[in-house]
Image (tube, rainbow, N blue to C red; front, side):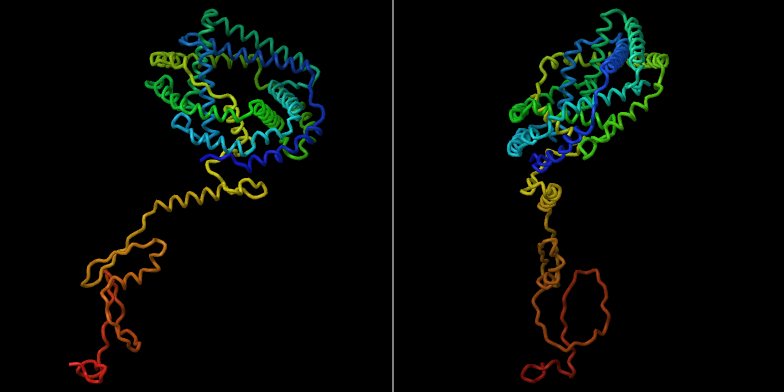
Length: 471
């Protein structure tokens, strides 16, 4: 059973309510275009250096597929992992059609799209500007540059030139353009293998790995109709906007430590930006140190090239090429929905999908969520149905064994009655109470209930009702 939690959906609007006031209070968050451009150039050159280094290290590795084709499987594996985690369903291990149908019904009645449409999307653009500025300032600070200073452009331009030169040097160490392309494909194979291993638990370079992957995709294909039906209920554009809003909030908090969803957070923006500008100092390593690190990394990567080549050969021999030509296609809105569920849980602690219905109280935001208690009670009841009633056996003297089946909770209460009913009927004679002449002795034998007549006070035995003694 899957349920779209109505209480979580209803709680979205109050959670995002502080955003308009905070955006109005945060002031100007735009940086000089020149400084931002210089930073982008420096970061781009650094990225090119890393790519050239990897290409040089894997230049000797040859794979049979191009990078763009392998990128599709990388993205598919990541998407499957996101769907499985967010929807809590084994989409590649079992048919989940009925569960997906239940989720679709819950979403259509829960009003999730209406709730997302009510979020303050007008704050998205200024929040993205703040996220971009704060991120740029943090990145420049890591390079030892104060992005807001007058000399930021010159410093960043010099760094970009040095990184570009190092990237060109790393590229020239490869055996021409063909080798660089082969290394790029090899790097794509490494990324694809890691994605499949992480999200699907399958090694592409191990015997039988491709067959296992094909079996999982076959099961996934059986779930695609239900995933497509769910896709039809979702607004991809609205989901994209909501994800962008969450990404901006996450970037702001990561760079500045400010949670813009708390009241009054907007007033902290300008002081925090000034603090970021002052914190820029000497970079963690100089360009010469960076070059040494690159050389060391290159040597370490080359040592793994043989392993990559072997994995690629095993995957090719098992038919990876055929599998890459017929990959399943995940419905885009459903995938966006899964990403959103993951972001809401990881970033805000909001769980939209539950594995059981909470009952009628779940739609009342003013009351505490009843899901945990209701689900716990259901589990206890289910376990109780599995219990078998214990059997209590009693044996009486000169009588066959008698077994009584009773409920566990009432066994102690009815045990005395069970003992009496398990013995032959006897006649009880009323006597005056008297203290026992001997203490009770423990015995391991089955319990027996015996009633002995009182010793007569005169010879000849007890009197009959008429007054005469018994013979």
